[in-house]
Image 1 (cartoon, one colour):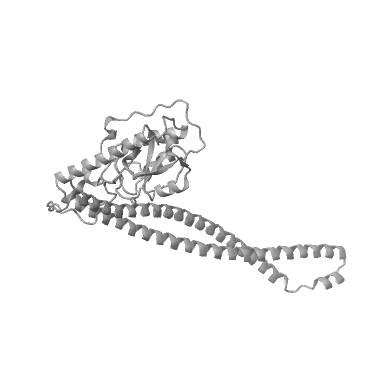
Image 2: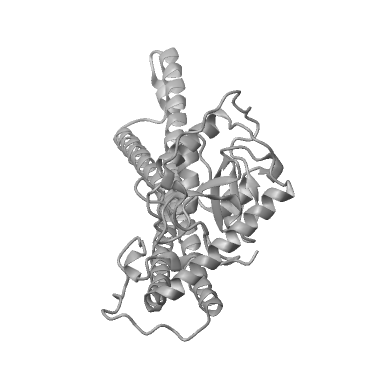
Length: 379
């Protein structure tokens, strides 16, 4: 189907865009003159602007996940380094005591051989020799432990420094990516503010026409299977997702008050007790694939060639998704975006024998359905 960007469903102004943080530049006070272009050209331009914004969003999400893992790694290394330094201090104390004992015992004493010859009790001297041998072994072990602890502390210190450097690099990269998202969304905001009511209405009409045609074609093709029930975990994921309907899309958000598309799906399954990757691309890459005719509620439906948008299947050809900035979590036709495939987080789990889906408000189907009108739009 022809992919249509739905950004123009925003109420004709930049103020309706939902952003994670204020944009770098404010919208102009006066409405700019609408561009003298055809609606199809406007759609193409909006698609390009959203594509840039969402490419940055997906990269931002991936970097955020890497940064979380790197912070945890740095924390673990620092804990191990602290333990290693305590062990090194103990070894140094033991080595100090050893040095003092050796120094004190070296003044005014005879060699072990002379002590044996002059002693009135040779057996006592022999026993003392055994004690000396044991002490020598303990001294050797103390020195070896000191050497090993010093080497381990040095290695961990180097690893901790490298981990901190990587963390700082990721944090700087994330800040740059955040700024890129804001800049791209500012471009979308500026363009939306320039459109007339007639242009917005025409874009919405074209969008709905394409969605309806794609949905009819998919259902008529028989590619979707019949009614099925979710697994127990899938039912819990759906229950969570249903409760989020109406909450705004915010790029980089994973609840509890706002979501982007993969933030919604990852949190739904986390609340079901099954942690899945954060981004739509990782969900597609790592989770078991399932054919469309085997879809059951709770499966994830992935869109666009680069797996850059994702939704939660609820049955009857419908999904719950967080579509895009300016929209809210809602129920949409499964064919609202170009389908790539589907994955199943709970592969191997049996379907429930009896399942009654949660009830939805009548307005759950209202609003924009499409994610991003581009094969490169992120989730």
